Image 1 (cartoon, rainbow, N blue to C red):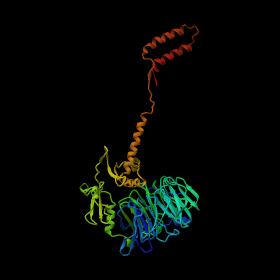
Image 2: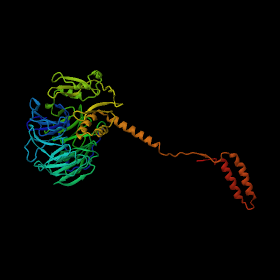
Image 3: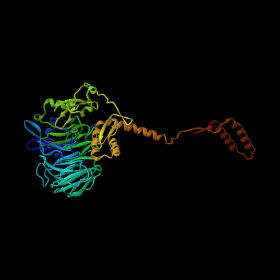
Image 4: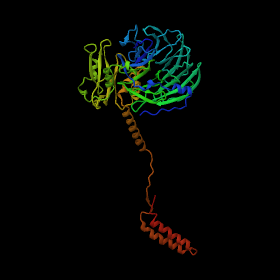
Length: 561
């Protein structure tokens, strides 16, 4: 979706905090860059909600008054614009559907040579990188990708950059590949810096910096897991990864700031951006939270969302926009003049809260009822979705129920969903997965199952494509419990250790009886003594030694250990 405000454009695609560490003292220039302005002291409050028919995936910003939001599962992009005093509204496009599979990324190509202002790139699971305008006009396609395209940027010289799940970052000039950067493991993300460098990172956690297509520095193990994003920063660039950390780097690869962005309930940091007005940073994660951080990595604010947040971007005016898997893009502001109505703010906060004890969840229509159409456009109903009271609105245009959020209730309790049997086993969750349009299979999993293990086994069994595998993972993961997973792994570790120790020899002390019948020691003493006495040369020392030996046998050496 695009949102319109004169001079601004945003593009978005649908689908126990630790103290920061400053690893290198910044210079005077850098310290100036780390100084936030007074606006940073205010809290962000909901400003607007942009409703989509499918989960939002990524966001690209061109101005503060126009945004493009891409929907992950539909492969489409939507345009939203803002006109005061009406607010944000959807702008028609001549073509919205860009991909046959997932829409993975949407990015502004501002500054790219050979393309008009207002050009965007949409990358998808169908291995396509499509160039289009905010009106929906297709300008072309960048060829050569062998897997999903999930990252895009522009170099200082105006070339287009893409990152792909095949591990390669590509540079395009005049619509053709002009250079391919060395391959990363499994995936690559990319960023062009205004100082002329190109930064790439990948699945192995390495960060590489190139200048004039030559490697300047490779930081091996910059992150402990897959690097999700590389974004511009006033001091150079910043990265976030599946290890839960965010790091700020200089354009030459010096590490300046490190902070941990996740709590106990989350570890993947999906998105990261810098607020231009204050130089603060914003993260979003799989714990359904958006967090605001000071320029030196100190936590300022947490904004809880009703669903996983896949992307976050900052508008030039200091507002931020988030893309949620619940089918909504939300804008937050510190300016009281742009805050949403009190009712809308309360609805958002209520939808983000846990616990529906006051609502009779068991009596609500089940998730299966979502397959039935509504009676009219805008009809609102509450459904029991995995033990939560979820509010849905019927969209006549999209012919589907759209999740609005979680219904408000009192208390923190919630009933535990009943298990379902599948192939002789009981599961917390069972769902149907369409392998093709005609063929479907059932998938079951429990809350303490690792979602990666579930999806990997399922994908191997049915030879799923990467697109479908990703969709299944995105569906399964929110329905698992990280604490239960950790507890199960610890329990299984202990059980394996105990089982292994059964076959490991252990040493214990055992005694044994040297003489079963000690009564025979007396006659033995007499016979030895008689033999010694018969020796004409027997010494007193020998006689004393015999006596000591026999005493020892009788009194202290019956058992040995």
